[in-house]
Length: 421
Image (cartoon, rainbow, N blue to C red; front, side, top):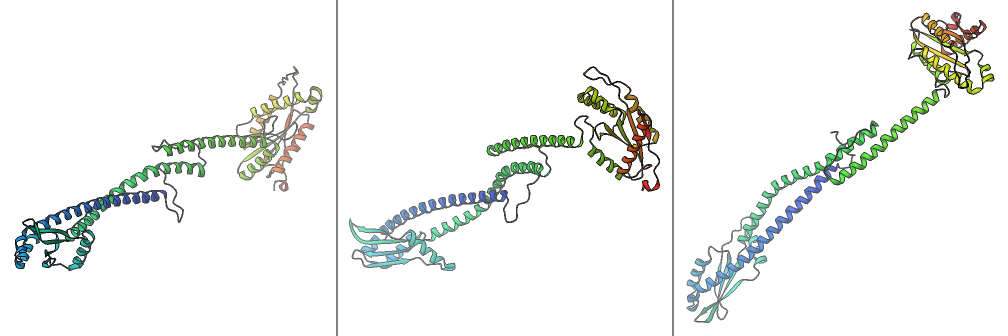
């Protein structure tokens, strides 16, 4: 398949446009899906951690109940350290029933790489209020426990989520790119085919090619319209060629006899002599119909036209396929024999022309006149080396033939050196 023409400078090819659009959509979809999953997981983790924080607060309240009753601060600190050391809790505060702080435990912070600041920021965002539980003894409140959540687990979740997202994004992007290129190819290849057919039609004027069926409905409809347009162009081209051929034929041929006309004969004669040089001989016949005016006067112009058509057919029958026969005047004809092997060949053809006219010409009116010729023959380069001089020599020989008694042929007299040059 022929490739599409290169893109115009400053313009992107359609394949690249489609690929970029597909990749944008794929990346947007992946981003939205990943973000949605991440947010859902974050919300679920926050709910779980809040519930866990409340449960931890109840556990701490139960564990420090006796120590709070006896106001044993050392026991309170020891109990808190055992219960919350492995839990996502940043700090614990214990108050008596009057609101006085009995204990305050805080988890040691790891501030490497700014981790502690990030954890505090996450904790403030996700757990703005502490989990608060009453410490009860014998059914009455003896103190309060306040637990503050830690952002440590959230930070781990964020790092894992980002890592998984980046890890998944690369293969997902590669897969999306592959599918994008395949989808673009399914659109571009039919368009390339259309472009190749259009290029042949535009550059080479070949309207016989047709676009093949396409899988995409819209492109197949375009193909139908394109092929229909090519059909119209092919029909138009055929008509134009036929019309031009008809005009060329009319311009170069006599409408009555269908022989070449004077203009075409003169041009062909000049071209033949110019191309030939002095390498080969050519013969020029100048033919005049004897007493043709009498036929027109006695039998009418329609009979004269019929006689001329018959003369044309008989002249063509006596020459070779490559020779040229022309009507150059009312009842005057010319014949160009080229290439000519020898002079005797021209004499045989001239004799054949005279013999074929001995047969009467049957007319629609029932009359059958007999017509004769007077033929003058001039040879190239023997008598002249240009078309005008050669024509003049043949014309002179024709008039000599008429004066000699008509119904015969004569060869022009030898040319002088000045005439040949």
